[in-house]
Image 1: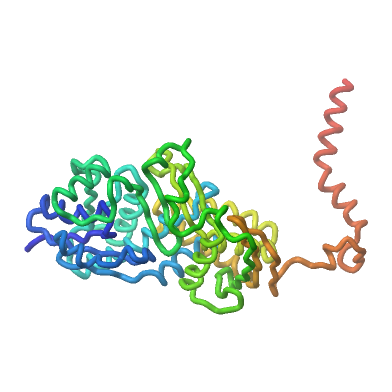
Image 2: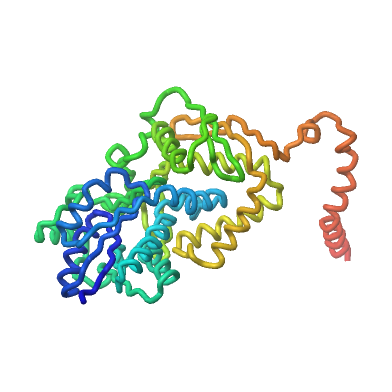
Length: 405
């Protein structure tokens, strides 16, 4: 019986040539291509014909968009998790859901191995393989970039041309891109030198350069229930549709362009440009609502947790006890994060235009500069400061006594 290999297939340069390479190097194998649709848009068009033309026996095109937003994106947004202060984890949290579906199909097909096109220098190899190990440790993993003779994207183009394989890139446009419903990333070519300014007019796919956006601001209102965005300008929307609409709006106003030099898990720094228009808006709005609804200690601790969760997601550790425990903690903090946030979008920037919540901890009677004897007396602060500052006072007295000796 021929060995069955399930391939994570995107239709991009790498996975297009991998089908032929597998057929050459694993004699008699059957290659089953699987594309997890997490919002690549037109990139999924014509994939079945191209996969079969390259030698695959079949293609599974799996619509994972709703599950991706609801079960992977929203938990990370609720946590406020951002990697190294800039990266909104668009590729990172897309890989576990794709890998999970690869495993499910591999088991259903009786496959012995899963193959992916991630390079040996990147993070995605870790994300795919940790998920496979967590869900189906018996499956073999094939990573061609770690074992074949192809050394560059130019070599990959040459291989495709020699084998008459249709690919969506040319040597003049070899940016490595990853697109989904949340974002699009750009790496390679002139971006490999951090001294180069990104050529935004040439690069951007989702977003208009800020200087070319409308001269009038755009106001929007996002409604939240328990930390999850549920409406836009009063209209109830599914999470997926809401993200799609925010991408359109944010993209038109130049929101969410990030030029990042990040620390890859494998030890090197890499430079990329990310477009996350809708995601940037969601993070901002959610954060504004938490300012109203969370107490000081919870907010402070949650910021520490957010950093750790971002690292876990970035490192491919989605299916781990710690990630699950952190998500459970985050959910408990979101019970009162319900309300509306109004935002102003203008020339690539976001600013708050007001927020309200039935669970708001802001009390105007207390916060007002006016007198409010029943809830707060100005005189109370004197005793509080005396106790709060007592360690400082004792230390100062000690230093003074030592100086007088």
